[in-house]
Length: 430
Image 1: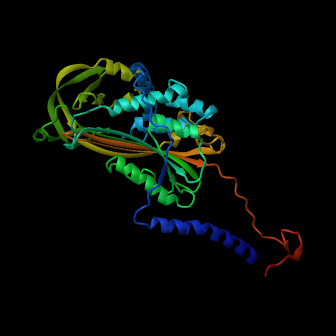
Image 2 (image 1 turned 30 degrees about the vertical axis):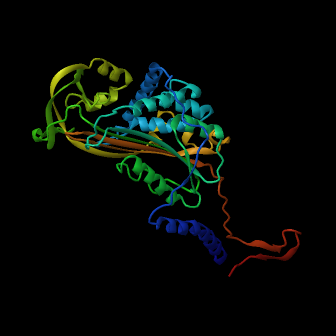
Image 3 (image 1 turned 120 degrees about the vertical axis):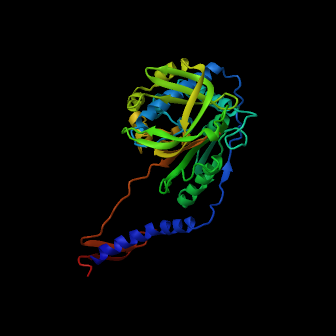
């Protein structure tokens, strides 16, 4: 018994060493910044990509967004997520996928094209979106902002294929930030979270939850989207009044209800009322879909790309008095289960994922895809942000276990020569 306890105590002491190191790291006031390794390739000019091809990609992204929404909507309460952020982060991951993993990702993400033509179109869509709102105002009185940022966070000393790094630099503007996941996973997590917080003007905090980064993590791909825009015609704050809002169970609550007259596109399809409230510049709008009382679940179940296209195609400018509640929502999701159920199974299977386009080997897999969203709608306009993290780990070899709990032999020997210095057995350690 004494020998068995000693063996286990030695094992625990080995585990405590990195735990103690983590405690020291977590106690630091501010994590140190990572060094950055960039491909020598610059982001490509893709102005030659036709608008029709950009729109085709956007339609695929929308179809995926609605597929994913139907699963996330099963969770009760308010929701906000950024489908574009999720598509972008997974598109970067897709750049390293091969075989069945690549095929499953393409089908689930509704990518209309194979790898080579796909990434330039994401680049073009990205640049088109970042051109919106020039010269317009934000909801906070500052300038209009639609910011898209991508970054990679990699284990120091780990090998990545140059072609993968070139792809992400040329089409996603993403550099490779070097961290030490193996020795300081908690510090690395804080560094990544700080980057996300900065990119989203402090609206998305703690994207990567405690424990999500492990010593086996080798790569984290992150995307952050931040949006801040003023209405084309702001609501008058003096017109906002407490008003009844009907809940799913039929009860009522009083909420601050904004009110005003707007000239905006509206439609009604199968009892669903729709209005798209434009922001300054009228390049971006807030589409509101209002089903009849008690039919929200029915709409959520039926809403796909075809139905949404039908509603949007019928939008026509009208003068409308609109009442809209002020609201602010924060959401957080682990997307692993939802993406797996949609068909992206191999990506999350240790030993089953093929991400050999990243490092030339099949020893990587995605441990989780995490996402956070925020939105705030007021009389002045809308502020919203979303961030996605794809956490990629290396497959670990199975750990061997030896419990010395029965009689055994032992030898003290010289390893270089094989000379046995001492030899014996233990039948009763007492």
